[in-house]
Length: 283
Image (cartoon, rainbow, N blue to C red; front, side, top):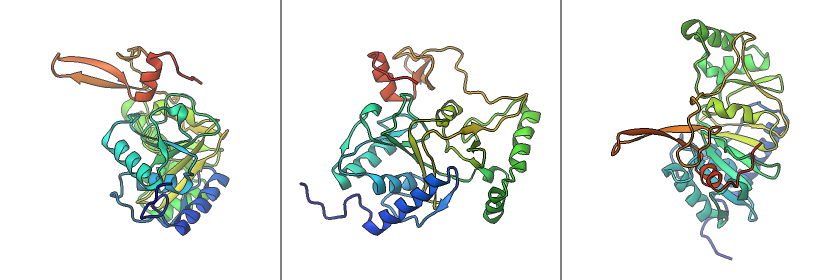
């Protein structure tokens, strides 16, 4: 076995125990933000320290890890975090969603349906959904305790009055188990329905804000919507991905400066590669 000059998973064992205890509390109360002692990490706060601390606390020697950034396995953020975790654990890493037991993500949920034996860890920059409408931390705590989400509903209503629709393209507010309003992290609206009654355990970590929260498997997660203005996902006008031909995945618009051409490509690189080979597990 390879010998390292630092503890397995970088964090000390007491820190990992504390985070795991707080995660158990978060799982027991879906959508509730649990405070924890966020540690200093060898990356800047805001670049995924919350998600990284969760991953390093729950990863075991038998786990296989995948890290994505906006669905991509090869961005700077994804590569650096994957290399750091691999260097401090020696664990196997992969770019295949189906092979991973732990997936750490920034701003996306994989297109490929995840299983009960997998965990999805979110890097969260701003865990408090009420921050849209209330700057005071003390007041947001009270509002959650009393389930007082009137200001959030007014915020959505004002958006409709101004633009004729709810224009939030990310961080769309959801209600968990008919109790807590929750920030699903900056995922696009396309991914929000994947949280509802999912097979997978979702763990959210905000290192800068020192908050953890969770959505256990088979939990009700419903986007806030009005009876006459329903929640909708992004519309790409039926445009397919140029690489794999998918019309159901979340797409990025790409501009080719050499050919002066605009086209669409899957945000999820693993999904795109496997879909091209016809090897995708769909919901």
